[in-house]
Image (cartoon, rainbow, N blue to C red):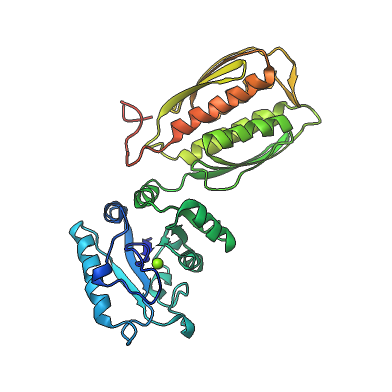
Length: 374
Ligand SMILES: [Mg+2]
């Protein structure tokens, strides 16, 4: 099935004038920073490119056709000079007060794309207004909002469109990279006689996180991964804690590892990393290799039997299970005088190593191995 990018014009390709009654004429024509190289990258990704724009009152006395035509031709010519050509143009010329079905976010002019030839779930609307994200919802597509992150988050939250909005960015290079690499999310559910666990992961940390394993200290440690790795985690675990902590901790590690590796996809553009950090009197070092071979080393000694509601012997088992589920090499060393610090230092160092290891190298498609396979 075909996929499309429905791309807004004013505020998205070219800079908008300060008020709606000022049109983008030739004199005020200015491209958004990075849009030409960004669109060049995007145009090679197999999407059909559809320009979709409201041009209020175009062709009437308030907005003569010639003003639009002159600037629009330059926009298309400049993009075409880099090989970027739109497959279709959808332009609505009604005024907002007319309430026309063709006016975005209405889908009246998108009929061609609703006949079943297009995989709208894998298509995107790219635009600078919340109405562009509402359009994405109305089409059953996802939205990319061109705004500074904080402002965009407020706009999206105010309309409850968090599920629809796949990315908020005011950088065209980031948008191009996002579309090139795809969404790195996964959800894994595992039910056994001992545990019922669901883990959702977003490696790029766009969503909210919620962690409830029934073990308060483990929740606190997993929060370190969210915070220090910059990932989003939704973990819900119901385990047989009336027996002991073993099954819950082991299975959380397994499902978390499976979700992390599933979200990584084909692992293009990722690396192999490590991180060491001090935590008051203690120190922790975690080396991680996502190259696909399982190896585990653990050099940590705890003095106490428990930290909070977690037995300290379970930390080794947790990371061994996690590393095996992620098919990774994982070497962990830590020492110190305070067991809470040692445990927290390990989780923080793991999070930092993970953050570096799963980070996308911008515009790198290569696999992180000299062999070319991992
Ligand atoms: Mg716009």
